[in-house]
Length: 283
Length: 58
Image (tube, chains in turn orange, yellow):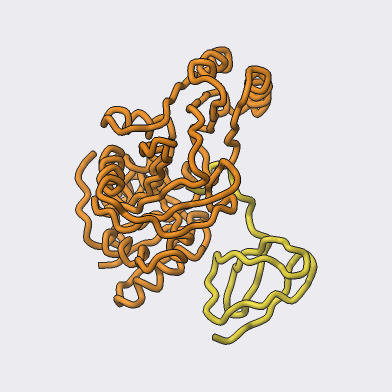
């Protein structure tokens, strides 16, 4: 059994995954996504049996996953999971369909309808790019003046994706959010991510600490992971002041450097186990 | 772990690398703070790291 690990950069996460593979003596090849060229329909003997996708770009990761799947290889996570998790609108649709509690969410697909969407949510509202990450371009809009300005500025970005408005209620969380790692349907670890800023993303300086994996939290995280198709996932949640848990997003190419520093759970080793042994069912 | 030395392509400052450094790792130049990508390991060579793109990350 050989494994291809698709990468964009060799971050701590990838180093830990390579170390886990080397400890097990599993043959693998690191494939830089900048070198990928696929001749569609070409026949040949695959150089590896399975593929672990660690590509940092959603667009590149989704296409690479589809290309390898078309060549008959199992890719983890599979393309249908990448597609759903990489787009917040598709994620919210999957979560809502499964009856999972999320922040109230309204979508407008043109700037013309954006103000109506924002005012249906009410102020303050949070506006997020449908495809985007690390907390970039998240906006907390406190009043109509700010909403109108934001809509105008987003139109000036020109890209059609910025003229789709994904609007959520602002949840006044207690200075932290929660992340639960779910691998193969099993909740394996949870952390709090704390920040003085309303954006609690480790890429924006949030710090992590261990969070008790209560039965309620574990069950909700597993339901959310299942709703988006399962696999190796990081489920992000917020708490209302009442303690109610809300799922905000599910990440398909999880970063776990913060979790690795805060817990003893060897996420890289669990990822390797999943990539080598999981059986992917057709979407 | 043996440290090896190479230089920043931008400011020529010496940028140390751990002995087990891997290609496509990212480091920051101690001289000019530029993000550098390791493009070879024997010897260690750096290039300016590609920009983070809009759909990068999780």
